Image 1 (cartoon, helix red, strand yellow):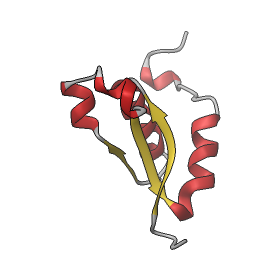
Image 2 (image 1 turned 60 degrees about the vertical axis):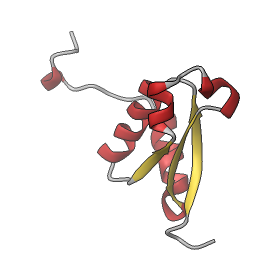
Image 3 (image 1 turned 45 degrees about the vertical axis):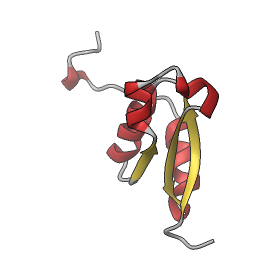
Image 4 (image 1 turned 135 degrees about the vertical axis):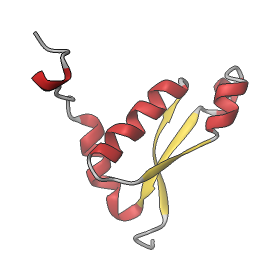
Length: 83
């Protein structure tokens, strides 16, 4: 497998969850993309039959991306969301 070849690391039935996961990865410096985000926004009922919105990253980033998504996300005091 080539290092830049896209590999699927997740599927989401909810477009917002897929977009959130992608933004977490991008915030960690990992590039990725979503497959079928437009179908999910226009006809979300089709996502159940198709298996959902798929999240892809480069093969060389696969293990790191999985670790980033599995780790709990911390919020800082700067975002105003912590007590």
